[in-house]
Structure formats: structure tokens, C-alpha cells
Length: 428
Ligand code: 9D3
Image 1: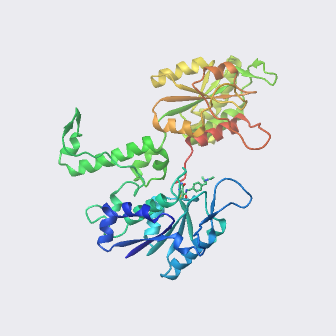
Image 2: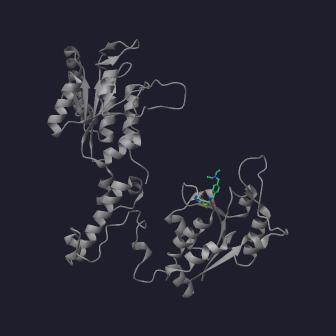
Image 3: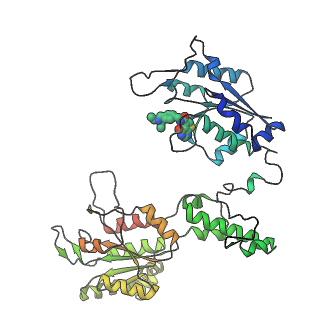
């Protein structure tokens, strides 16, 4: 029988939650026991004081170590190797995985604190510290109940055979599919036909599909960590098409004059290779000077059809993404024709931009993962995109920055970093 023991100043808080529903049934059936220990019984002083003022001053009270340690040591003595866990806002975040680990134990001692915290020295007498989330509660009692509930459900027999914990949400890291019961129609909302079809294979597929869809929309973070079948992994890939434009005009020079910069061989090659590596769909090289178009075309031609195309096949593949354009507007029109709708314009700038909120890499990544729109990422050469271009963009992307007091990345380095932030693999 799995034993839960709670050390608390408020034992009565536990009587109702532990006395109902699944937890009650499990205790009645002898699958688990919950013992609540009143911390005050471990006070040696006449007034049974459990808290005191903090050394160094400050607000609030701190739980004294003596009664807590006495209670913990007593709990350890009374049984064989219990796991002792302190509930504290500073603990490791509680999760389904953590619940599974705790369910492997035989006895769990949960220490609930009150006041503003417990004396730091208590930490060295416990095995673990757990928090149930990033919000402030009045004490560790409700967190202890949360842990008991989550662990108890995983113990053999607690849920009965009809509902195995593996079937439930979170076990494969996905959110639950939609559930319906009678009536078939409620205030105009019908139960989906598939659920009435009796075709259990189809129902299973529909549920999986809905789980994936809901998780992808609401919790992209869970989606990235979920265990997905090989054919489901495509759902992780961004659905939006990302295009890039390397602007040689209009951009600033170092005196903030609007200029046209020269096309450079290395920028085109390196950005094209980055674009191809991360799955960007095209790279516009925007330059109004016709003579420079010729140079660019020659660079590309060399690798596309000339000597270089046989010399280096992979370079050819990257350069196939490059498109030459006189102006940004022309590139946008071109894309609108290709995609059937105007691209969302995402500008970038290393300079501080006043009065606008920048879109973070992760927000932009979420957008690329959830929409099917075309996006055009603008990269400035020289001293960067002009204020006019920035003001016309739908988003200004978070700047690529380090913590050092220096920010002079080449456009091709910045482009590669942005691509990794927006389209790079995430660990799983
Ligand atoms: C002044 C800083 N506060 C921490 C955010 C002090 C403090 C406030 C509330 C210390 C303890 C508490 C009581 N909370 C818990 O004991 C607790 C808790 C929580 O508040 N949130 C999430 N998980 C947990 S586990 C224990």
C-alpha cells in the first residue's frame, strides 16, 4: 500500500479533499493511505511556536527549523526509506513525469510550509523540493494535495481497469481530444458525425487528429516535446512560407544618408545557402542598379549553368532560390503573384527603433508554425533598413544581439541566426 504522509500546520485542510471521490475510494479499498501530521505536536515549547522573525529583518515570518526537522526525522524513523519532499515556490516544477517518478516510491512524505517560507537549513533534511507552478499561494497545503492527487491516479488499481492513465492527456504529451455525451444536438451544436458512425478505426484517427490540432494551436511548446509518429512530425514544420529579401536600396550609410550598396558575391552565396538549409522558399536580391544585376546574374549563372554548376551541385541548389529585383515593391508584387496573396512584411534592424514593439523570435516562430501565409523577411545591407521601410513593415523582428557592448554582425551572420531562431530544429 502506497503511503502519503503530510506534515502541516493545517491538518484540517486535508479532510475534505482526501475524503471524496477517487482518493476516498482508493483509501477505502486499501490501495493507499494518507496520514496527516500536525506540525504543532512537534513543538517543544509551551506556546507551540512554529515561526519566528527573519534574521536580517524584512517582511513576514519564517518557519522555525526545529519542529519541522523533528517531524521529518520522526517520519523517516517510522518507515523504510520514504521520499521526503518540501513544497516550495523555489522547487522543481511539478509535472506528469515527476508524478510518474513519485508513483514508483512506496512512501512519500510531503512537507507543507506556511508564512513567507521555511528556514533555509530545512532544505538539507529533505530529498526534493517541488513547486506546482509560477504563482503565489498561501502555503504548501494545496500543492501537497495536488501532488497526492496526481500521484494517486497513477497507482495500480486506483482508476480501475476501464480508464488506464496511459490513455489520458499528457501521457503522450498531447492535449485531450474533444468529448461529447448525449444529447446528439444541444442548442444547435451537433456531435460530430464521425463519433456516431460506429467506425472505431475512423473514430480513433479523428481523435488523434484533433489532439494534434488542438495541441499545435494552443500549446506549441507541448507539441515540440510530444512523442509523434514519423508521419506526424511534419506538423512541427512551419506551415508559412518564409521568403527573404536582401535590400541594397533603400538603406543607410554610416552618416544615415539613404544610399544604394553594391551587391557582394559572398552575401548572396552565404545567405542563399542559409536559406536553403533552413527551408526558406526564396531570396530576393533587391538592387535598382542594372549594371549590378548583370554582376549578380553572372554570379548566379556561373553556379546555375556555367562551370560552377558541375563543379558544385549543392551550391547550385542554394543559388536556385535567388531572384533579382529592382525594388522592394517589385519583389512584393512578384511574391503576391506567386502566392496568391500579399506577404506579411517582417523588417529587421540592429539599430534601436523608437515607438514600436518588436516581435520576438518565438512569437514569430509561433506565427510561422500556425499560419499558411507567405512571410517576407527584409534584411538591410550597409547601415541597415531605412526608417521608411521599417515603418511600412507589419512586424519588426527582435534584433540579433549578444550581451557584449558591441553589435556589428555581418548581414549574412545575422540572417543565419534569424533563420535558426525562426526555422531551426528544436530539441525534442
Ligand atoms: C516573497 C517571496 N515569496 C515567494 C514567491 C514568498 C512565499 C510566498 C508564498 C513563500 C511561500 C509561499 C507559500 N507557497 C508555497 O508554500 C508553495 C507554492 C506556491 O506558492 N506556488 C506554487 N507552488 C508552491 S509549492 C509551495
